[in-house]
Length: 224
Ligand code: DC
Image 1 (cartoon, rainbow, N blue to C red):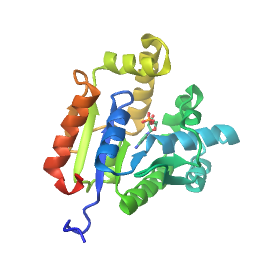
Image 2 (cartoon, rainbow, N blue to C red):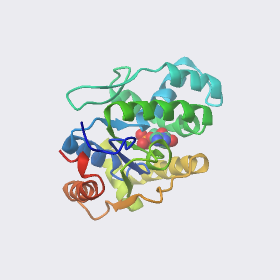
Image 3 (cartoon, rainbow, N blue to C red):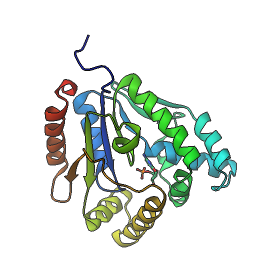
Image 4 (cartoon, rainbow, N blue to C red):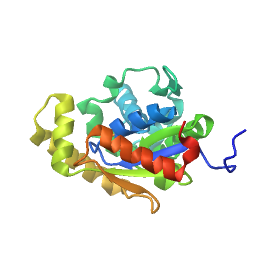
């Protein structure tokens, strides 16, 4: 079998705020390394979407935690696969309504405990490029590679607006509001041993190249 030390997970942790280019990098890295792509934001979004659908209030911590336990999360699709929630199309989780409440949902320790345990189980079972806010700092504090992605605010708003076909100013304001709410309850800080990657002046290919260099140095066993 492999010579990697017991207990060293086959996980690349990628953290950062909304709109910094985290998902693009994580998906590209997952493909390059042949590891499942696990976007943990989808799990928080799924709890929020299901709470809206069932009329569970966003301050009902136990009701939300029960939803977090019941949702089906699995790695599916063409190999190496990616996280799917109940087989739902992702569009359903990327609505303005979900984004209006997801920070409040993610603020509950009971919800975070449940989702973190499920993230840990998925990453331990199959390995992963796992994206979120607290992966390198909490969920996989023992990950051999941790990247913390940043970008200037104007670039974040412009990219997010382009993705959604809207204008940058209101999109930037909505991102700022969500950042502020997220930061209150779940401070976003790089793990002490994370490598910061600023995507502001880099193309997607350059960002991927920089990340692959970090992986090759820190965890050569993950490079196919
Ligand atoms: O990455 P995203 O924008 O899809 O995440 C949606 C929300 O979920 C975000 O506002 C904060 C929360 N989140 C979190 O608290 N912890 C994570 N590991 C991932 C997401």
